[in-house]
Image (cartoon, rainbow, N blue to C red; front, side):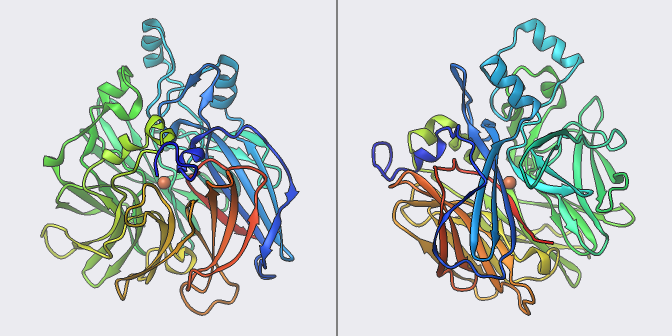
Length: 474
Ligand SMILES: [Fe+2]
């Protein structure tokens, strides 16, 4: 099914240049009247810049997508995020600021100059969040970009404060409703590097540092875990010598080395005191996404979509994706059990033997707490790319699947039905590429049964995105 097959997923990695909307979408089925609000999504959409092509999926220029629901209707808008990275890249005809695995074409002099005057990318193509009331597009630097959630107009950078500092951050902050803030972290690179956890208050008051620990070789961490009382950094043994990053001789991620002998290191911080209360080891593994975590007596249960090693990063370079090559391994849901009582190594168990990425759960109800259901984009047995939506019943160790021939769904975003009494009562929203028609549609599934309720046809193909969130109408 690779390469020339008309149902190849590869078309999801060609550029989308059209910006449309707001336009009404043709709906099949019925979007429920209670679904009122907006799904904002983000992802790389422009890979060919001038006569050049970026190296990696994660380096495409960001595009925002907005689906508004109300009265059973769906309207759609899409706009490029007009970040500095976008503007400079389009003007210069190549990726102007260093990305994940693509470097700007720099002379030796420019490289040396960039050591003294770093100019990080603000190509926020990974996720969307709301920081202190401002809607922002996020990548993994400390430069969120603000945009108007109604018009998708870009409003400029909203940098993480100088008090927090750092150069690298994440696109997966956690929201703590009880404390009225988001938690995130940065890595401060230098002769003495640090991880620094910080809070972003919902009321717009200044960010505040929660905790800081020194680190010799910072790990590549795309997300972290949160329970009711704790924040947990999972240091995967994909680590970097900060000097290499400083010299910038290779694209960002190519400076990181896989050192499995280091194993995994979990760092558990108290949310309120900032105290590092536990450091625990486990066998080497890699993950992009934590799923959820919770306190279980004297243990912490930490769930993630886990890989044996980071070869997935190599598999999602643009060339193999555009050739429709099979993705050999997707993460599997694994539960790590960490004892706060003693120094015993962390144990791990397979939740279900199922390939699943871009995991979501009933975040509003279960973030940091015991939970039962995971939804994610799955790869079915014999599949070559994310080709299904999978629901995992963690309690029963069972899965169910939505699959349609030639269709490649993205992250399923769970939306709880207003007044829902139980976990998982609601719907899933997923942007699906129909590789046969060469267009995308927004799919609405019953989150419990994975049966299709409705779909809304988009006017074009939406390149494979990464993440997004639903914001109820106020
Ligand atoms: Fe992610």
